[in-house]
Length: 305
Ligand code: NCD
Image 1 (cartoon, rainbow, N blue to C red):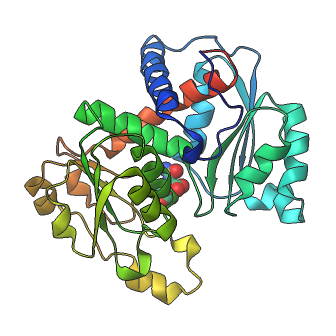
Image 2 (image 1 turned 180 degrees about the vertical axis):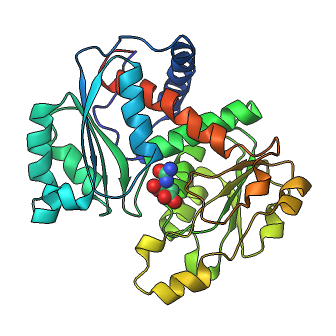
């Protein structure tokens, strides 16, 4: 069954039917992975264009493509890119979509993904557009929540850290709106609260939420989603330094909560390393899930799953 769209730009475009389908194909892809992969995408090329740093997202997109028998061409790092020379996103896309069968792109400007998708003649996937959206991360987060908690409906989700600039919490919020009886506890310093466009979406979808600056308020959550303060979005480095480690999930805290602890990674001190051994520390399993979910997305957008 194909997805009813050609490009994946934002989680706002997804329906519950779409997420159910993506979750189910991702579970199938986990089985494919266990068998060592397949040649479903033999002869297909992924262009992976990263104009902003990335480790997991880029590696997992490329690994997903290779595990399905496809191949990839890469341009990463501003210094190598046409962006550096001043080429528009649109021009880059018109050209890349003649070279590859599918494109994923990360770019520092919010809205760049939408512009890229408009001119791409092949399926386009947003791998993060500045502080805007990161839909594939949100889908792998959803997959992880479902796998770790056996359900999504009725969960209490605490999001901690940089809720203003963190694109992963924005994208995840729009997916939570597709589920029932969700409660969000939003823990952030007052300078980094969840944007109004997201909280008004919560209201529209009947997601109850509380905003707080106290991490203790997250203890009763089912999922504790921790984020990094997004250094690259600050104009004033002193402001970043002041806010960067307002919240640290330490072992004593992690042992007091039954919550599944998640983080999109990279962490830069928000969760101490001694938490890693706890059974509820799910962030490395979460990163691992990125392969199956991206295999599902690439295959489905290419009409092959
Ligand atoms: C996130 C991102 O790029 O938005 N990382 C990722 O994709 N795993 C989170 C972050 O950089 O803080």
